[in-house]
Image (cartoon, rainbow, N blue to C red; front, side, top):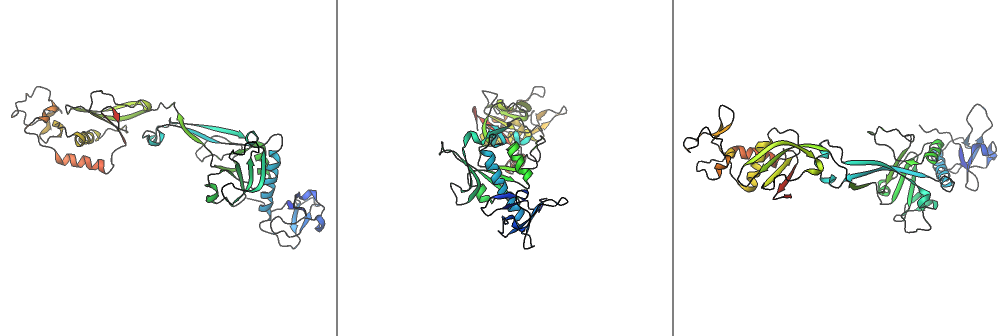
Length: 370
């Protein structure tokens, strides 16, 4: 919680003065940074903390906040022109080039990004630090503006300091490079000068950070790219393959995420269902293939049943002259006169596709990813 004790005030020239740098009493010559009323310096006691008080006896509620705000601008500006300067750092993320449309990352495969921390010294890019300068694109004023006199085309960095009230969204989303930090005490200011402006960690980030007491956010900075090439997550999926004959297969498989591709040169259509669970996928896949190409297969016929061994067999095998001992050829359906489409099963499965009750898929058709 912010202490309400006022230890900095303005002198007659508008300069900030510490309580121990002015005479005691009403003759200190200082005024409140917020309401501009005369102050009394109380800096001779040994039991209470030295502080300023309003001569009227009624303290200004904004005095402390305003003084910290003014002090932060002054001390940070002075440090910028000093030998050490001011640094800032934020998290930078490199994504795989396919990340935005990648199905695997959404299902727990996390080896698709690389996070690093990028650190910069303001003095390497800028040589000027000004207080209360308007933004280049808006009439709003910035607390501090860092710019380059030798590279006037270089986009400046603006620092916004707040004690209790953060900047409005219109300013933060203006497209300018803005660093916003919350400062509650003189110690916070000194911490920035010592350690720099460090982006506040996310709640789920377990890494340690000496600057965690500060709330620092970055706006308008480039903090990501799509150049990460070391993606090698092993993924599990159900692979469906349809051949021109009408025969198909559907089985569990796995692959590195950057090696997912059409596997059979002579296949007509392949679907990768991005799920390690194959239950129900076989039936849905065969009807998706039928919907696209209309190629009949015995497994789509109402006459197909299971024999005692659990294999599929046509119940009309005697009528059709099919030996009960030979392996059933599902491609017979293309020319079978007794083929009866299992309409109910097809509609039930395709309804799940229409209602998006299936896992995300990647499709390959005639050698191309569609």
